Amino acid sequence: MTLLATTPTTTWYLVLGAVLFGIGAVGVLVRRNPLVMFMCIELMLNAVNLSFVALAKRLGDIGGQTTVFFVMVVAAAEVVVGLGIIVSIMRRRPGATADDIAELKG
Amino acid sequence: MELVVFVIAAAMVIVGALGVILRPNPVHAALSLVLTLFGVAVHFVALEAHFLAAVQVIVYAGAIVVLFLFVIMLLGVDRTEDISIEPFKVQRPMALVVGVGVIGLVTAAVSSSRDAIGRGNGLEIPTVTGDNDSNVRQIARSVFGDYVVAFELTSVLLVVAVVGTVMLTRRIKTGKGES
Image (cartoon, rainbow over all chains, first blue to last red; front, side, top):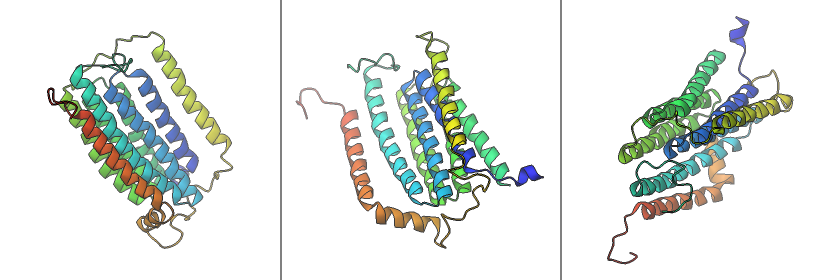
């Protein structure tokens, strides 16, 4: 039962954050639907949040958790603005993918 | 015990993330996102960030994912998209290379700096909660003390975001000019 007694170290959390960030980056590059691309950006933000909290715990600095708090607020604002843009684009041309709106022209 | 919690939560995070990028249906992708966000919240609890875990569940898994689902339903894009069509042939292999490269680079950097961020002693050091204040009280002291200017600017950001979104999604009435 020595395996169960091992506690996860900070390195484990950082590696998990790296994997989550990589999956999110692949998703942004591969998917065509703007909504799903937004979800992948949320994945990357969460990966960075996880790394922040792990290092805040390790270094004993509450500033890391405060930073995550601000990142969450900015992420919420970003989602609101991004979804507003997507709604106004989709209203004009339904079923648009990221390739259709590459020229940013109405 | 902590190892079990870590493994289960990490599995939730990875499975949910893969679901987001592999599911063809946007609704399924949004629900997979909920799984990932809950996994991250469990990690936050394990890392003694109780306030952030609560905010994660309420704001992310609650508000943001509901907003996503609302927009998906509003736009009527809740049908399975054909993800087998690939406009650029080399894009997926290149994306895979980029993803594996990012993961490999960060993992190499983390493991090479393992001595700097502590090795072997795990997360045993009771530093964040070293004083007897609760996590919420410490964050409050930090947010309303050291970072109070940033906090006030955040409120400005939220107001600007809301007003901007209302302006963006408003239909401009024809015949009444610019207003």
